[in-house]
Each structure stands twice: as structure tokens, then as C-alpha cells.
Length: 388
Image (cartoon, rainbow, N blue to C red; front, top):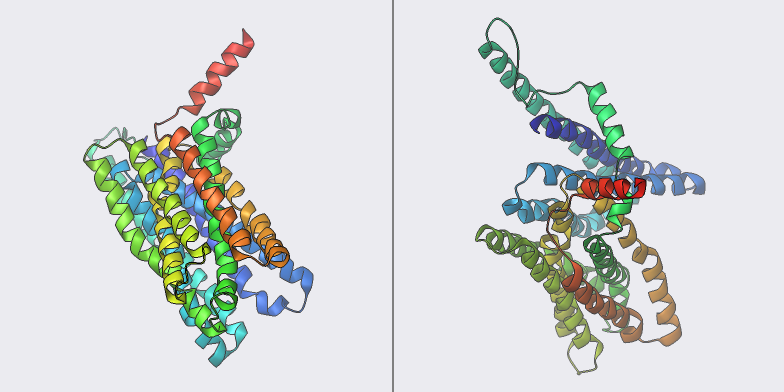
């Protein structure tokens, strides 16, 4: 088992590094291709590809190395970095552009990604060196015959790649989609992403047009949701891990956290969409609180992939994340269309998000589960039945 984890860590660590490197370099070249539309489109596609593989690679590394009692905190640290990066981007991008020009933002952010890759590779080499020292110590202790029986010995890279190819070919896709828990994750990811992407895209406009904030004020207010998410994440993750450590059923913990992540923004959006004569700062506080509390999903949905299958956590996240990307295209466009046709923020922005948050809660409470599932066993049983 240790050897299996080692070669998977090597392969997925490489995928993660390459993903970050691709999106960093693609970001850095944007000023050079800004006047050439095909080059600009290609660079954005490469950014998407690089960003697309990274969450799954990170999820698999967590699933294979972090015990369940610490999983929420690990996921929160990794994915909570999105909120931290958003805050830093909002704060530093304007002065960088003002002093160094708009091109400098892409150069600097791309360079930071390359520096991260160098640091990541250095840490990986340091760990490999430690593993070699341990291996040499074990080899010395085996005596003159030189036989090493340690399960942690590393496989050759060729063997690792062959095993990875075999693993990919043997992925039980059909069994994934037979699982009610997987469908619950898919729909929950879609619902959460609808609220996230539509608010991310349209809240600044809402603040400006509906609350009469100027563009500068709207931009500063837009920092508050990710800032609040950082605070809530630091509370939600230990809360979930502590419950699991004290013996509370993992499924119950994930359901509690995801329910908070859905019902909180739904409730605050309802209050914001009704004309109660509230001052703008109260509505801003409502929306900020709701979106911040949605970060409880990091201790809910985002841990469930790993709970039900350590082996296929990355693939399951890839499936749900793909469906979760749809609202970023359809939801944002539909919201804009509804704003133009209805001139009502309650109908165009808040009502669809509230609907998906509420139905997502029902589906999650009904079908979600963190019980480990042996998809390979189910696939073998199905194959046996079909051959009979």
C-alpha cells in the first residue's frame, strides 16, 4: 500500500506541477498575444486546461495521504487559497496597473506561478532524498543478502506509468453513475456553482445599479465575500473534523456542513430580494454573510469525493467539477438576459440561486453519503452477472 501511494504521489504531483506551470505561462503571455485573437483565445484555453487538472490532482493527494479526522482542514487549506488569492488580487492588481501598466499584472501573476512550481519541485526532491536515505538504511539492515522487503520501496517510473495507464483504463465509469451519492454530489456541485458564479459576475453591477454605489465602492465591497469566506473556512473545517474525531457519523457531518452552505446564502438572498427599506450597507452585509457561509461546502461536498472513494476521488471531483462549470457559462449569460428583459434583480439573480440552493439541500439530505464505496467490486459483480 505504501508503494502504491508513493507512485501515485509522484504521478499526481507531476500533474499538479504541470497544470500550474501551463496556466502560469499562459497568463504571462497574454500581453504578447493581446492583439492577436487566435493567440488570445488559445492562451485562455490553456489557462482553463491548467486550472482544470489542478483541483483533481490536489484532491487525490489529500485523499491518499490525509486521515479522515483531518480531511476537512486539509481541503480548507488547499481550496481556501482561492479566496485568499481573490482578496490579494483585488487589493494588489489596481496599484500594480496604475504604477506599472496593465501588462505587468499578467507578468507578475504568471511569474508567481512559476516560482510556486520551482518551490514545489524543490520540496518534492527533498522528500525523495529523505525516502532514499530511509531506503538505504533499510538496505543496510537487511544484511549481506541485500533483500529488501519494505513495502514502501519506490517503483520504477516506467512501472508507475504503466500502472497508471491500467488504472485509467479500468475506471468503473458506469458504476459511478449508478450511485445515488455520486448524483447527489453532481447536483450539489451544480447548485453551489450557480450561486457562486452568478454572484461573482453580477454582484458588482447589482451594488452599483441597485444600491447606488459608485464603481470604486462596488469594487471594494466585492472583496468582502472572499474575505468572509476565509474567516468562515477557518471555523468550518475544525468544526467538522472535531465532530468526526468525537465519533459523529461522517455522513451526518457532511450533511450538516453542506446544508449550512446552501441554506445560509438562500436565506440572506431572500432577505436581500425583498424590499424591506434596508440601507445599502445592511444588504451588503447580508449577501457577504450568505456567500461567506457557503464556504461550509469545503467541509461538506468537497470532502465527500474523498470519503466515498480514496482511489477515485480525483475522477469524481473531475466529474462534479465539469458539471459545476456549466453555470459559469449558462448561469451568467441567463442572468444577464433576465436582467435586460425583466429589469428585476430579484427575478434574474436571486430567485434562480435560491431555487438551486433549496433543491440542492433536499437532494443532498436525501441521497448524499460518505460511506466508502467499492466501485471496482460493483463493476466486477455487474460483469459476472452479464456473463451468466
